[in-house]
Length: 435
Image (cartoon, helix red, strand yellow):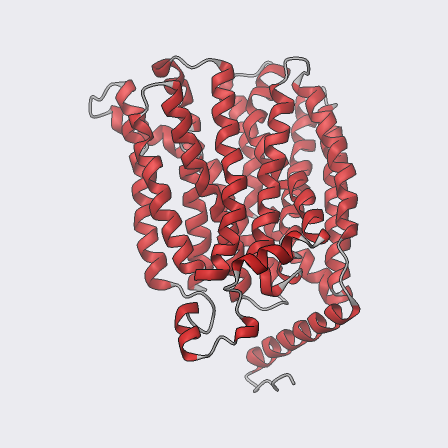
């Protein structure tokens, strides 16, 4: 449970640092003289770089363990967050945002580490909760960073210097949590990978240190790419809506910027419980129908997400639009939770590589959608309609995820054993070890 809380807290702070500059962009724009196109390019850059880093970070978890990997990412990622204030032109600001985008790979480590720590009967819930609570950082930063800026300006600092100093705060907190992560977590319940290799507790056949071999196995598995597409259609959509929701409500319904921002914030706040709910239902469906149950629920959640997005794009009344957006947000985040309710079972010996590729799919989807909404030829409403249709099509990719009879039987035995141990622990009885 120490690992559970430190993973979501670390992910929360990475999201906080990743999007910390977003609410300060009006000041940055005026200070550096950025155009709308240049601002759009920096946003795409901050999302695009994460695709590459997520692909690399998964195999690294297999090789050196999530503890070392997360600590290193927090330390290295804090540097561009704190130093973005040194930017004095579009080019240097773009490079800083590109570097900051690398901390989005923290998601892969979060899901990897939680998958290692929790049993099959609750891993979906655990993965979904750490990811959902971490995603909250992207919403909280919208509210907190302006307050930090106000505090800095209260000391008589000019606005052009204020936004630069304000960004030191999230970077410094990331350094503090890096120390906590190093001290209070282990790679898996039995200890750290390097110590287990030395003692022989980690058997060669169970060791994923051969990162290249694990990546090759993941890349050659069609199910991994099906989940890549699925995650692009849920997490990619969430990142996109986070970027355009406020301006959509501002333009479409002629609201004030503050009101539009508050309504847009409702979309992100659903992460408090919605992604966890996806993991819970994934575990519930698994209890009844095994791995195929997880797949069926994922398809259902993603399909409804697409329908809800199409409906949202057609709403003309504000109250109805907000209500439909809430429903849409619920199924977006449930789909995310359900996706990583399946990931731990695709290939246990290449978990890092699988999680890295699937996680990269989310950012790849955001990049593709970003170009869709950057086009001058389409309105935001038309873009949302086309995006919703794309999600409906992508939902069928979930049905391509199949498991062999042997794998299903093995995972069913693991699940039942975990359930038995849980019941025995709650009753005070001694569980019977599985053969």
